[in-house]
Length: 312
Length: 245
Image (tube, rainbow over all chains, first blue to last red; front, side):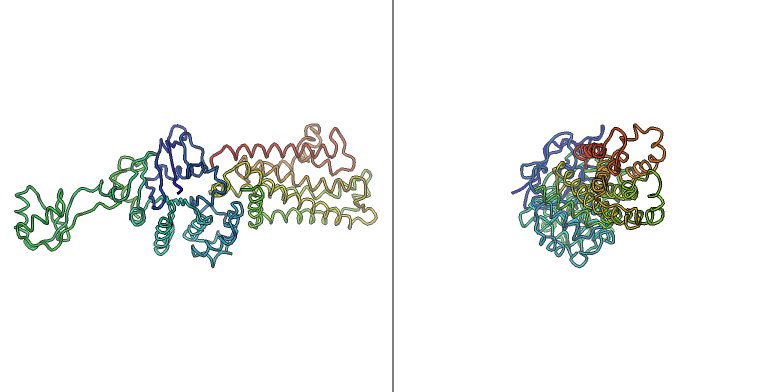
């Protein structure tokens, strides 16, 4: 099994540390979401893992070996860094053939990945005529070309239409089910929540969190319930005897902080108060993420702007 | 990963970009067009002059073909510096010395083939316009000049390619080299002959003369051009190895 191991990785530009003593491991068999504000060091980390940039300190290895020592690296690691990078004058077929030739990958794989990414019909068109979404699909085709055990995608859903976004989500889940190691950076929280099993969160080049998605959400959720009832006055006094207050939301529901649905359900049953609806509120990934990174957003003028930026 | 595989991949890169193989075709097309224009109009007059150099005059048009060769060398490397193309290339071939060597071999090899075809074709076609003044490849120095002219074009392409790997921009290299090549012959040739002889184009073009004058011979002149190209390739190699992609 091939994991990505980053150990004390540091990249300094002058006095700024883009990546600062970063250590984490990306394991096979699950999709790891790579999150962080702009400038947190996600793309730099990916370039360091691929040996494209020289680290100031620390190591990054794939299955225990530095990337540059892999004999035919595209057969082990497939990466999409920048969909705009393919030469516009080439066709997708020749772009992929260049990559296949150097890594001893059979020409039949070129056709296979064009088919898989829905580009088979435009394989002979020049890349410069492509939309961003089509370039993104080509970048993903290039990443899958060598049937790699490790897949690294930087913002793969950029420019994809809703259908494409569903496609990439299902693709990433499938790759993980097949036992591959999948690392995906993204700014879109709702989307990341829909495919990631594990999260690595960066802020200012440092590791802020490295844990399963479920745990991350739980650790960032404060207990809170929503409910509806027909006996508002009785419930309010029952809550008051336990020191709880309910606020009424715009949609007519009540919101109670500091309790779980379990506690309120038991209370209502004891008092014989009918409840029409009762649910724990869970933090969304967006809330949990903003909560975590609010101190580590280098380019945010205020919290408000951060929120807008992070929305899909 | 074998050198052959990487070389194959670099060859596909050249073949699959129209402007790149276009500039290779332009080496031949430009040289032939200028040969026909020059020798077809003033060729005989020139040949009848006292002190005419039939061998050197036959390759006059290489002066123009070399611009296309330089453009080819520069563009073949600079296409790696558009957007993040170099990252894709180095992710596929992380051994940077191998990457650089294969790229330069593909550029030099294709420029050499095109250069030799160009220089022989230009010689043979040009002579068709000269009537009784025409010479053959058997003329003293003619065959050497035709072979040397082809090698010269390849060396100029490599010189530009190496500089582009160092400076990361075809525009910078072309705006440095082309004025140099166009202006030096007119300005420098008379005033600083001793120094000018060792410039890459002056030295290399000695091979086109039947009897080159001065301290450098035909092949040692070409060797000076080769040294310029080698220096540019080494500088490019240093840059490719050292810099972040």
